[in-house]
Length: 612
Image (tube, rainbow, N blue to C red; front, side, top):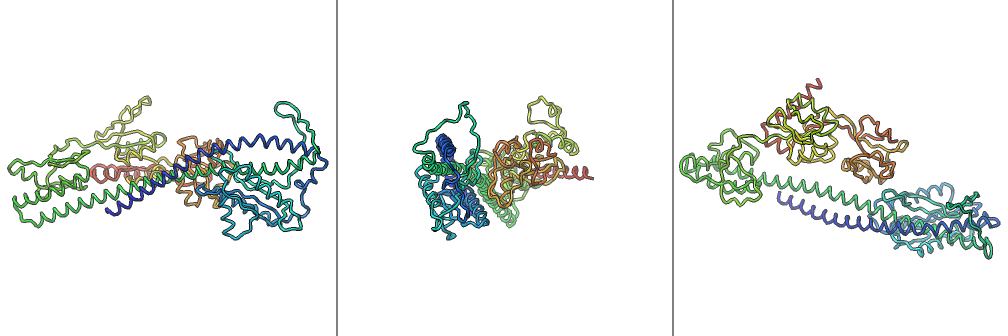
């Protein structure tokens, strides 16, 4: 047990160290996104003016369609594809999506009878093609997170050289495409394909600009064709530069999202490991107490009958049991040292005395071989210098029953009435802000809280029983919760929904963004589908998340589906069927065996009677 506990603690420390790293990387990526966006915005005015100048030169040129950068080859045999990936990993599916899109484009061009020559930006893409032994027209690494115009000019020059190459020589290409990741916002980036050569010439009427002024007049020296020859290479370089900038912003956004997901997973793993470590520690304490109790019983059984012998047994056992009680968190209990039979009887150990400590009780503790303690009082510190005899409690502790607000509450009240629990009148006062209510049962009190809080109160022992939906039980997955009875009320379903007309996520997708208030359940379900899900936690209004671009899908409870329809969403997949459950704290179920199991049985009978 001790070794197992050490293993858990070592793993917790390891995960905590990893969490610090991922959190730092998330913050760094967040700061770099802003700088990348600023560089992207700063490049747009120049591109706009360049496009206007190219359009003006083209409109005055004699025959633009015959220009080398605009003319299409009669027989298209070769194409170049510029694929922009990342130099570093830990960015989710950013590089993978670009490579997949490049492979799909390559297959499409091959189907048209064209040979594809890839030009690859980023170490991830270069490693992909090198590993497969595929020829590359160019390799560019070391600048993907902060590209400069010089990098774009070098890439653009290589692409133009490949495009201008003599058709009779190896290396000449007829088309050039760029695969890049378009930055839409912090939460959404799309992998896109753009053909940059040959340029497409479109005849259109130029409208006045926003200020109402007509299109400016240009004078070209030495000629419009000469100006066009000079501007078109710059235009190609600027398009490459723009693709690098928007890909850099998308890379930082993908890395921030991946590191946030890793940090959240680390926190969830720490919680799980902490829970397992606590269970291992409790099991270790329980085993030690059981060994002490068993040893004391065996010694008492082997000792001959007689007051003196029992007195010696009690003295020998007081120390170990005292230490066990200290380990369990119980406070100092003084030993009675007055003379007479009463003192000797109090110094004896009885089953009823230590029952709360070891989870057992007996009707008669006399002669059982344990110090008689009526009640062990929990204290923060336990010097345990003496045993103190505490007066037994005359009134039992009340049972706290947690019930949720909302829809389940209306269906749960008739069920509570069949069990014999009726809330006090102030429970039904809609103006009341109270959260704790008495019932017709003096030893039972109700607390009315949010559904998610019901599971937390019961799992941590603040409440002994509760009623909550199975969706909440699955989401938190508390090991301290026991759900013995399906109450047969609160029926609905936990479903995946998306915009009307959209397809549900398929096996081809590696990443999806989902808005939900059930992140743990959603993440587990998508892992089963082989898809990495980034869960955006919302406590309500999930239905507008796809419309605002926050997420592509939502996971939420669905009863009639009316809310989905009115927000242009469609239910795509049912993740689980949901109904209300009676939940019990496991420790309370064992330690309060005279009350809690009886209530559970009453609920079970009430459900059977309602179904009959």
